[in-house]
Amino acid sequence: MSTLIPEPTAAPPGSPLSSPPHPGSPTRLLDRSLAPDLARGAMLLLIALAHAHMYLYGSPTGFRGYDLQGGPLDRVVAGVQVLLVDGRALPMFAALFGYGLVQLANRRLAAGTEWPDVRRLLRRRARWLIAFGFVHALLLFFGDILVTYGLVALVFVGMVRARDRVLLWVAGLWLLVFAAVAMVLAWSITIQGSPPLPTAVESPLEALGARLATWAALGPTLAVDVITPFLLGIWAARRRLLDEPARHRPLLARVAVIGLAVTVVGGAPLALADARVWTGWSEGAGVSAYVLHSVTGVAGGLAYAALAGLVAHRLAAAPGRVVTALAACGQRSLTCYLLQSVLFVAIFAPFTAGLGGRLGDAGASAVAVGVWATTVLLADRLRRSGRRGPAEVLLRRLTYRPRRGGAGAT
Image 1 (tube, rainbow, N blue to C red):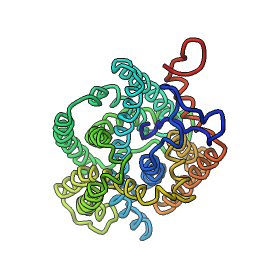
Image 2 (image 1 turned 180 degrees about the vertical axis):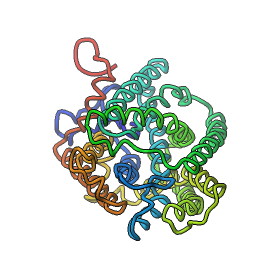
Image 3 (image 1 turned 120 degrees about the horizontal axis):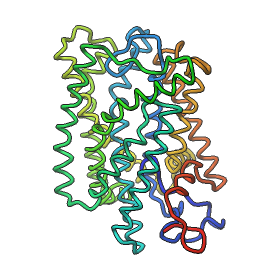
């Protein structure tokens, strides 16, 4: 039940889909924990906000891709998003991905499946996730992260069984690698400016190649970004921090408070720079601000996941319509993630509605909120009808091999 590929939900009790599952069947809705799904649903808002401004074109941009010539409202939006969204949503994604990988593995192991077979299943799922991501990058969005997570799962699947000490040491040491790569990128942006993005390409066919070229250059950097929070997500899943938030409320509260403090303090310099409030910075100061923003973003992503656990603990007895809809979005997060890109292309691309050349950062963020809300409403409607997300259904069919004699999965 990973971040983008949670085990599909079952239909309401009484329907044919609500019978007890065999080891390869989806987790029933009543058996799911609220916190991970709630976190995924809320996280998709952060993803929409982080991605929407990347579809804009026609103006020079700063470190995080925000318009340097925007009006006062655009600058406020850029500052807030650099502080609280950019470089914070991706670590949250990665932590939940690692968390979900452990959930999926544990469910198979508890059903009696041997670890070599579980490992093959996880790798097969990862390979299909890479295929999904390639198509996503080719047709819709150069900043795809599905391939990144698929590759991380392929390479680091053995960490699901690694000792806690190994997990934490690797996570800590990799943070140094992450900082070093961020420094190189920051120097490049400082000297050469932000690289051009393929969103301004007017020909749909030419845009295909431009997206792939940008994605090929961006992908390795994204992989470096996610490994530390991915490993910490595995560590958290072993302790069931989000599955049993009541037991771990003090720890979740500390992670939330300390993580938010670290991410705000660490992100403030770059937020001020991209909002054009701090304009007299030197090259060294700009690079330092970028690296500090990047590294402290890991704390922010973990803090957001912990907040979801605390909210779920408080509302689990009576979640209400809004929380239920958010959880439904989280249960269908792969579908909702891909749908965001479909809608963004339809709204922003020069060969469609073309708003990417006319809106500023504030307008793009408003569109992002609307797109996210649309996916939440769609997911809730699917929940009411007892239907799974179509992307989740397709991925599941491709991943699980049929059992002998009929339906099901090994």
